Length: 332
Image (cartoon, one colour):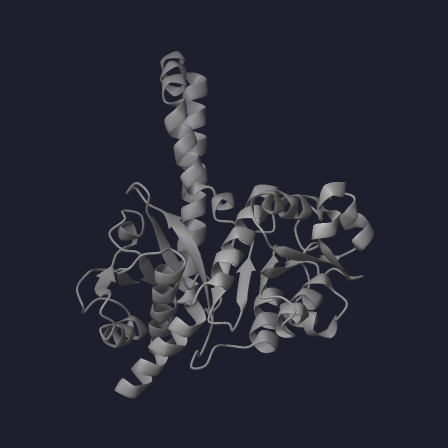
């Protein structure tokens, strides 16, 4: 049975939504959660029928969002530190944390370690698509803000492995984000990365920002600085459009009537753009599964993060990444 370490204290709203998310996941899947944090506080939200299915690991401290990521290394009694230790020591196969993302990434990289050949791990996230049933994997979205060409190339390998093993896309299409489709476009790291990525059979070339959302590509790679701006801008645009639609419906009788007729459609759009549907962002390139969830995660988001962790832990993604990098190494 898959064992998953859960940082039960890291979210913005305390342990309640995290623990409830674990319980919701237990109702649907077989796995063994290790809840790390204040045992007494955690138990308050676990129904009696699930107590025997949960393991507790006491942690007396919480790393707050205001603290520096590096301070996590000096606080071994925090819930995130102890949760990472469970994975490092082989007790658990995966970790889910809605806590300090920088600390999670730093601790995972240095304690669990990178896969053989991986220079830098990358954070991946799903972006909604206009093509029905599709979503685009975008990475890196913030783990690395100053990338060299080889780092971006490796994000392509990481994304390729994730798309094949977790998204179940047999022949995923990979593109590199640039300011034009022509090979001559882009800054120097992007143009150099383009040359390296051409070695991958699945590489389709440069893609523009709009292609992230039209379903024409499965994986888009970029520098973490650019990726984070794309992610935050997209979230802001989606929120603004949603607010504009609500204001228009509120101020017009005809719009209200149309809104009622289109309510099922709006509901479906909201579902496709809701981060809770995916649960969290995988940190790719680490030896074990690390899922970084939003600090404001609901119980639904935590449940789906756990489902993602289970799928990751059961897959051959780590072997796929190492084999692909080894193949490239031989070609150099």
